[in-house]
Length: 79
Image (cartoon, rainbow, N blue to C red; front, side, top):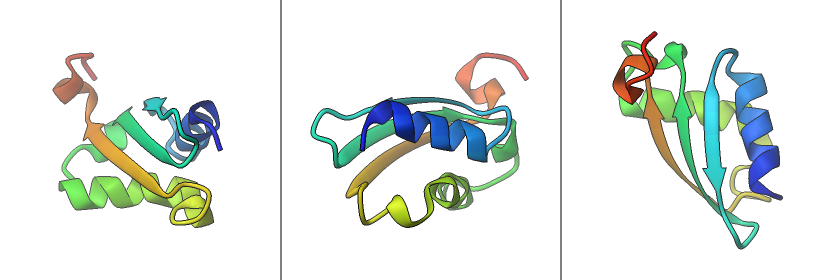
């Protein structure tokens, strides 16, 4: 597993989302995801949206994923 593949899965699964993913060991990753879909949602609900884009990879090929989830307004990119 690599960071770019995870980024692509998140962006495909959350239309309009922008993701930055980092991780050097192939199993532990950090991601910042900016999506309008997060508006009005609590952090746990936002994380569930991201986890849903990765499906069975979570807990398998992806051992750990640290998330930062923001709306475009929170990220300072408008919206």
